[in-house]
Image (cartoon, rainbow, N blue to C red; front, side, top):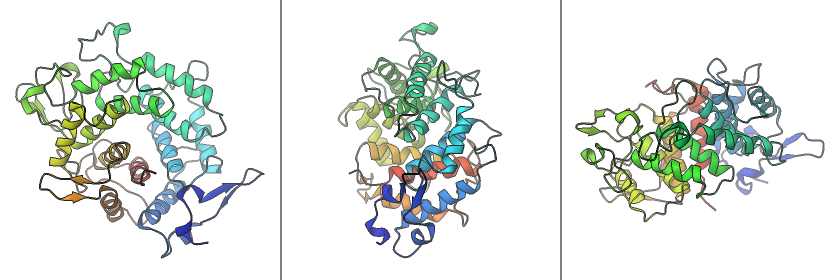
Length: 374
């Protein structure tokens, strides 16, 4: 049997004894019969396996959220089974921080972020139902952390519906809110769940587009359909700008906003989605994070691939009329940037993108979303 006849999900199988039989070992994946993405994925998974600490995690000096992201990325790669020792050990590490009674990761420095990412990891490892109860409780934990009337933040407040890091860093932002929405939707909540409808209000307020959905005073200053980091506290964009002249949109947040709107039930013909796609067509790139250059590049790749895959978009036609096969272009871009050991890091080390564990997880997630929708 050649690698071309194997689906990505059939690279392993679990025997009756619970052990994992690798059908297509790394040596075969790296042979001439493997596709470009298969080669890149295999090298990245091998790198991450080599970096697991004795505790079972990755970058454990930071927080358990990075370990959860690595686990989710490895499981979504199709190269790793939930029953493999590497994953079992990592899940056991995460469970040390999990509040089994009340749900979530309240002891984590970034409790909301860590809970959202861990939910994605638990969902990927839940084929046997072992995490069903933990997922349900964690969903409730996340809803309690969302800004709404229970924290005296009415619908008219720019905090309303948003989610922050948690703990002392609780100001809502679009990145954390997008993880919040993704975690709840991917673990089974419907788009019309009240928490998601509230979150959509916050997401819409982060868009540089004056409309009935965005009442912020700066929304019509740039008005390009892109997104900024947060509407809270008068607004902020990591790409710069101010409330008087407008906040600069950037692509990493625009794709995060786009996928959040789709998850929250908006269709392609909704004016907010159309406006975001307009920004994307004008700023299409796999060479940089438009608006930020090389900063946040791998987070951008991850949100770029997730959003376009969710939309089931096969090509993007840019403002010059050129059509782009974004899946193929993304694989090529990641392949060119991958180091010999299988890792990725960003020399523009902002947003922790100097951490090879975090960035390699982003790369694997991007590649998992770049697979064609069946």
